[in-house]
Length: 114
Length: 115
Image 1 (cartoon, rainbow over the protein chains, first blue to last red):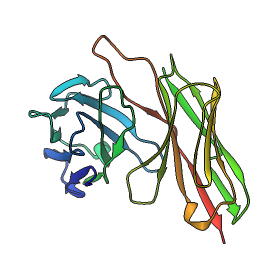
Image 2: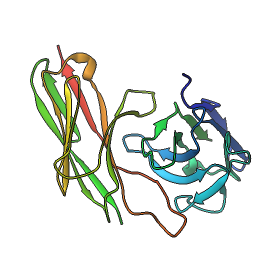
Image 3: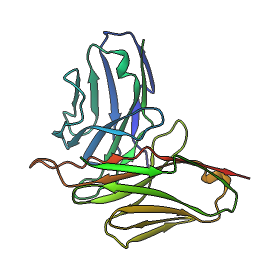
């Protein structure tokens, strides 16, 4: 079946602009996670949803970052007033939930802020 | 704070030369130790989950083991197609009453297998 998909795959934006990154999880997966991965590093947790509820947003770096999953499926990570330090690979993952801990990752969105 | 440390950072092996990758973790109440493979330009690909010390899992040339402080990924007779970055991640106790399934990742070991 189809895996986790993310769009766009690449995004170049100017400092100060807002960006929205989209994640479409594996069908039937109730849990969804956002991570940020710097070059040469492992993914770093940002936020987690169970169905439409945002259960943990402890990894969001500041209030310019927000995420939503209004219908419990597709999720959007929004970064307002982007800064150059926001440049990174943003990865989404999903899992079945209900105690299944295996997370399956999407291809990521490469964000470059100029 | 949960921490995961992987070593070595990079490893070059000749084809057929077996070796092991190390993952040391400091996690409050381990709820799972995960291994992923990541190819350049792609997302991490799930390999194994280990839950308790003494547990082992195998897949083709890979075997993952777990102790109370470390996990090892053993690679037997590797082939060039095993070249990738291998990531280790740990999940600890839930945060707050709502629960969280966030993973704490190490920086990875970049494995190169030379024909």
